Image 1 (tube, chains in turn yellow, orange):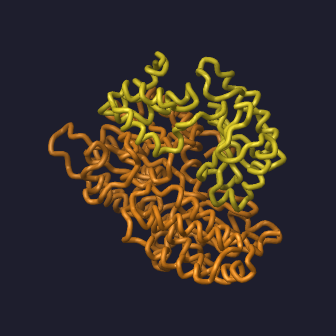
Image 2 (cartoon, helix red, strand yellow):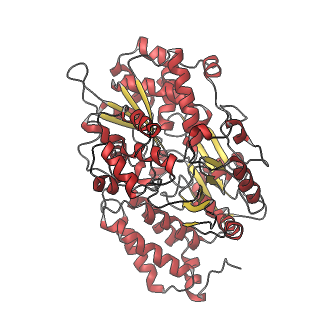
Image 3 (cartoon, rainbow over the protein chains, first blue to last red):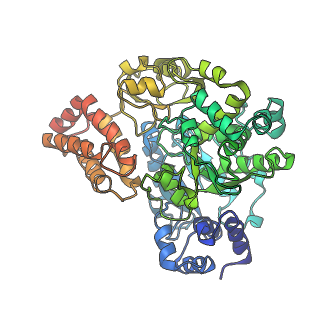
Length: 186
Length: 410
């Protein structure tokens, strides 16, 4: 069953479009925020809510890399492997993640805390290498400050918990060494 | 733009004459006059193709009756590797974009605008949403225009305008046949204009200061200013707003302060992963669409990638072609099948398992990927660095093949 929160979020997206089904990607992203990933059961429920067939929705969902059809860890690390980050040595960061969390691209840590995925250019090429952990961008990452970043994130808690459970927004501004977070702070 | 990287809030923006241009456009211009003004100013689409914005807008058929639906879509799906100009504009000055949207929507008489924002640009989303609330609360947007933010679910191909429309409609993001062009039959089958973030951000300044002023800003052929950027091993990587037509060498050596100590420039890409690999000679060509086109190359997004002499050019091509291979939507054969072969062949050479005959195979694939063989510009974008790289770095390729190893690996 979709929760009331989830339904309310989907309805908000539907309101932006002429027809329900147009909001299917937004709906999947909204539900994924709560559940971490889109299981077959979840997909069927969303399809039902949008009056689509599960097959149709599955075909659409599988096209997009930000919709996870397999389970992921509590937090997803997306490490940019595109050209500028490659030149600036993202591979060293990838190796350091391998060292610290024992995971490579496509893998989830044994404690289910982190999943590591490759990301296409994150648009932070002037501060490469860059990575995202859930919704937060970290730049000028190297093997020395990686631990600090992971630790800061650890204190913040995982992303896909109900919004009301989220720690105070202000905590996310944790300032770290120079050039690090491009944080929220409105 | 603020030095500390924080966005301009409504108060800041208003005190810098913000929303004066949209007010002027609403009160003093007819839609057709706005389009003429944009045409006269010579504004060219900043997404990379450099097509005239005014001409694109004027292709929207005039509304037969009031209430005929048409859409404005802002392409904020920045994902071209090496490109970070739209993030800078979105995060640094969201109100400028909103004001531009108001003007563009007036010009094409669109009551609804969608900002198609890249899924990873969460910070931009937060800031834009906040700015939108401020703008609606202050009444500067007006009742006649609805602006929606749509977060993308990923994939590079969504930056292609017709694929973007499919994504926005909640379908697989596969490019559509043109014609019909989106201006005639776009989003939900209605007339639609898709414009890049940077293009839209130019509009308030054109309306406020006029076409002649805007034209005078360019240093070479094309008009206005451009957000240039430099990434790679330079001392001061970043984005810089400079006159259109600024020389590449000024951007790299003056604004980005040159390469890190001990490194030399080997080549550069003028505007993202889908542009040619160019030698230092091209640094003396003015960076604008027309001047680069004269030299039979493309400026692309204008965010330059610097390749230094310690970076393996074969490895670079492996990285670039892996990106294109992965991001192909799979619709056209040369792109879906060809790019996998290109990547695998390049990787084999990089790992010391290449043959001389591989180079001819790569060149052939490059030609099959070139413009005309595929539906959209993804394959030609993959072909540009491949063909130019094969020529430019022929010695490196031969060395990899004859030594059966990558000479850059220690």
